[in-house]
Image 1: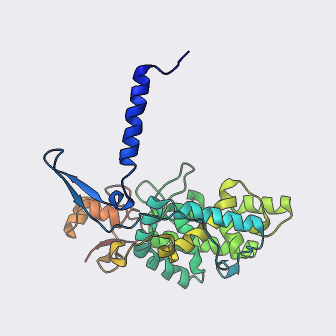
Image 2 (image 1 turned 180 degrees about the horizontal axis):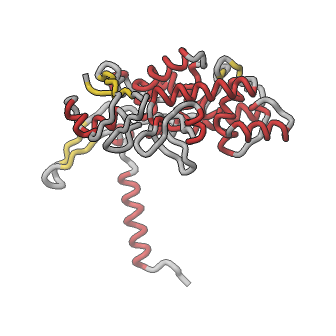
Image 3 (image 1 turned 45 degrees about the vertical axis):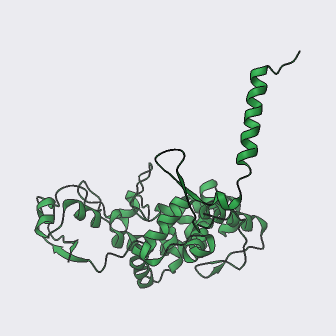
Length: 316
């Protein structure tokens, strides 16, 4: 029985003709932009010199890698492959990586200054990128801010969290708290790499896994998927954000987000503010601007207790 009816054969013939006709378009033609005119008979061909948007290449580990001055043992096959995975994932995760590159110019100077003051290696700024993509986000577990601090941990390092204030959203104060936590983990677990792993999984979990596995080095320990990948994601982000052009990200300084330090000043506050909207307008800024520059202010008011004082960023 002939399974191809006449209409089907006719359709196949038309399709074949279309493929032959349009398949003949040269690569140069394919690189041209077309602008449709008033009718189908008027099509303007605009020649452009656009390069291909990207080249798909495998990641090659061309050098030794370090984290906080500690050598990454790339001679271990598993270590090498885990790093390659994170470099591949993050270099082709375009939207997130582009935003990280843009945000880094605004926020890294603030973070770097505090890390230097607290004697914490500058590589730890990439922990903030891994945790939050340099955004004041919250997790279902309750961690918040650039450094994704849990409430109890944040309070133990001096941050205020109440109905009106959450200083985990305060970049400078939360970074100071994070440096204290990182130093604590370094003192307890002996290396900066272990400190980064403990930052992700928590002190108790890291200590328990170290005891059960009889291992004391992050690279030789086995965790759940997130922590197994964690330090390698930090390393990948360090490499990509340090040399974005190597990974095809052509983002100029002027295209990145500009620092706020030159446009803002800090106003000391020692008395309660019943209306932050009024406060904003008194300083020639909108309520929205006040909240953008001070994300730690949660409501429309600020209650200042006895002996307390705060600083609010306003436009100069």
